[in-house]
Image (cartoon, rainbow over all chains, first blue to last red; front, side):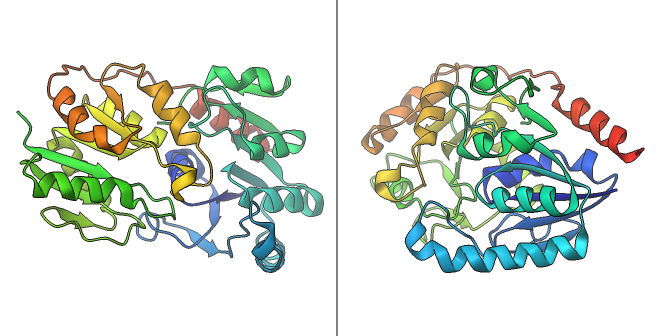
Length: 154
Length: 165
């Protein structure tokens, strides 16, 4: 079974790394942006993609298209069975494309920084998530029945 | 008595000059006399009077945290929770959207929420950092004991279930 960890850099990536003891039992790879804090600590295949910066539509279009093509190429090559992510925006294309094209399972973890307000990416991925976890109880009420409280990764 | 102060700017791709400049000022005015180690991340700024690193390797990071008396950090959940688990007082300075330090103000919410916890001091106006350091010296905190959350077991079980298909 092959797992894809998709994450933006920073806190999201740190959260994903907390799951490595479990994920590393399988074949896994990363899709993330160029950043720091991973090159030596990550032990698997690493794909660096263009940051689509979905919040900035003006310069975003070109970056968004570039990002889309990069992701399609990676997914075609790897065909992951499972995608694990806590966001942010980078996970949107990866999860929807993987689900549509390869019927990948999606595990979404609401980030630890959301105590009582849901994240945009959480709302966007909820419909296609096969496992949807939150780290703080305060956000449960914003999501439907699928959402499960799991406690904090840190 | 504080010996070492560790400052963390995280790995977010935007710089956080506001915090490092204030610390540099306090070191210069001798309001901070302790040894200071700063993890700069994407903040391109050499702080005079402090030992600066872009990023700390795991072993060095753990050693530094173990020896530090106080943690001053951008207000990321991970950074704050790590400090609490080690029983270190922590000053959380939220990155603000208005200053171009982050994409939104979720760090402000984190700081407000987590400062309800004993041992966490939120600094919203950077001019209050000096006072926050004084207050941190008076705090006595115990290590935050968190049992292993079920999230790990839930994910582990789900992956096992899918793997057998």
